[in-house]
Image (cartoon, rainbow, N blue to C red):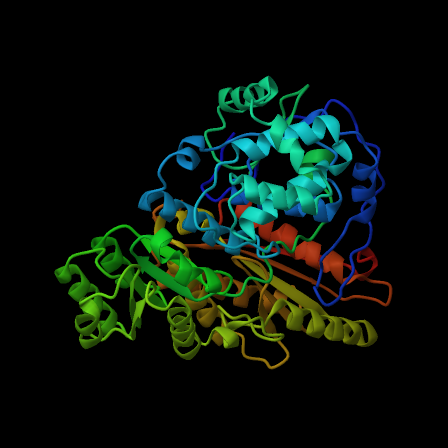
Length: 556
């Protein structure tokens, strides 16, 4: 099975040996959250089916596994599989947690904020050892199975929302109490049950070579690897195509990015209160900090630990920040430092001493974030996407419904155009999410210029998708515009080492139009434009695919 570095799901094609008896997909509903479609009948069919022949390998210390577990809880499927708790990186959790591990962990959480903004997730201070918690889960599974799901959910949220150490017996006592289970259960978890070792061996010998969740159908070996959307999970479980418009990455709003030069663990008391509002990106060396400050997408703030580097490195970082108008803060984790005068003289916005007065340091740090970065102004807005400046998905929904009704009454055409950046996961892996964000914003600006009519709308539809609506225009009138929007990306000449087109960034474009009647459903046109875009992508990308439909074919 092929797996990408972000935990995206890649399926191994093989039919399930057993057909699943379920009804056809249900109707989608447009509401405040716009197309949080349900396919309720298919889900209900799965909820009624015994799927314990499908093994789910997950790790309490993996943010991708946490996100999947949260989604399965939301979809009502979490109890339907045979869950096998494993450890992706036990050597990291058991040993010293160095700066390299801090970088990896922060990168994973940063990725999840992009990939799964529907899941509430915060950066913990480190990756915790899950051995004792896994033994506890197995004990509860064996003797108190009715409490298993509640306990597992609480353990996950204790790590990834509260940032507490589930390797600490005191923390586990609190979790057991919240699960209405006796604390004495921990007394029976001194020795590891042999079955946990068997699960670990089965996971390791399968050769997944990745630290992300895995579904495996026992009898056939069919697998789904990574963090699936509802669509990809349904298609894996049903072995059929389902009409589901997924909204897993539709509401991402950019968070302020704080570059950290120093040890995250020592600075954690300062970072912890704002870990829900910012993305913290540690860099292990002054050279890495300089590289980040020369990237196309700059951090919003640089946090430097006093004494982490030499005086020359500190001076260099300060000079780079000043040259690029990036504010920087120096924090001393221990006693007051003699470096305060030097740091402030070099242009640091603040010098904070954590040991002297932590509360005051936190307040000053948060003030800089508010004043310089306007965190409060970066919260979700009802009408505008915070990263690209295009219309939000909610605004698009509202205008689309109105224009659809008008087209039904007047019997005029309406068209949708969907743009998907080719191989964007590989782009983010190669250049980083900050550069990916800058790229999205740049392309959105190029496209927005060529869409001139006040009734036309361009919106951020997904993580790397832009959706356009064009009332009273059909596909023949828009084909040249679609081609122009594709060509603008080629002309931008953006480097993409993993691209199949001369190492340059390209896009796939789908265009769909219809003249709806009073019985028509807007979701069919949305499905149609997604199919067109998918065909363009599967054809190698950097192309436009057009679909049209007769009024009689557009039905709810």
